[in-house]
Image 1: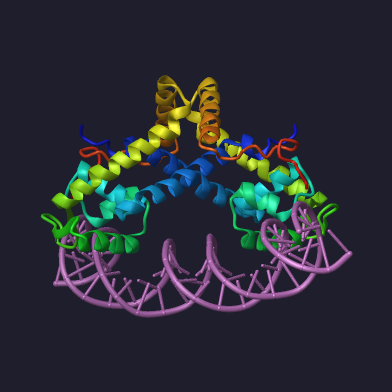
Image 2 (image 1 turned 180 degrees about the horizontal axis):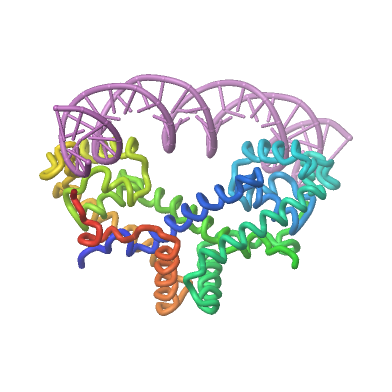
Length: 156
Length: 156
DNA sequence: AGAGATAGTCACGTTGAGGGATAGTCACTC
DNA sequence: GAGTGACTATCCCTCAACGTGACTATCTCT
């Protein structure tokens, strides 16, 4: 029962891949002037506009204090806008502006191309299997990817 | 061509999984008084004892400056030891001590159990496929998991 | 022998995450 | 319907992590 070598550990593979993706994506998005988290914000707003900052922060796994700055940055660039929340007056409703929608489209293309390159060593079938298994595992370990509008779209 | 929702992006899944693993592993290793990076060091030394600090730092993706502190910590606890490098007198040869070997075994058990739990939602076959695909992707994107002794064991 | 590169170490500045506190608001209870 | 506890967004502050640059000793190549 000799222990597994470090790179045989699935845990190691996952963290390494995660770090790799994060790093490369950060670099690829520099020309657009945003970071992966900003892309995440825009994506979430595409799915459902007018979320509160808290509803953005949770799925992105960022601290509420940090979210203030993130929204500030995108708002200053005219990509999004804080409006009054229609239901909860404590919260801000974050809304996409046309420029934000446009930038998201560009960023999405960059990300998608990167992903294609990354999975380029696999056949189309294998790639699909890979992504599917990742989703299954994510779900199993309780990573809330259930933020699709409707499922948890409670604007309470 | 509506863009993919955030959680449909493979890149997002990977980073999320990576962060999840990192966080949980960090927590699980607290009782043993080490962090994932320390476990990585011990693992690498199990595979090949007497590596230089640089040879530890690179595969673990940590800065050489940081490695100084990591080695310090484990050395103070009597888990490893700096000796003179047999070939390169600039470098230190980092060697495992018996206590380090023992701690690694405990940590390895913890990590392995965590991995089993994480992949628990998959059948044995699926899990094997998943890990295999991860390795393929890692290799394809150039993550050097080729640190197995012999392949890059140049002690120059 | 000399020039350039490398291993390990230290000192420094910068950055980022998180804790605590606060104002405004909500929701629930008595 | 007044009060209590919880929650949103914000600010301030602290602390740890990271990278840069500099420095010494050593190696390698010419």
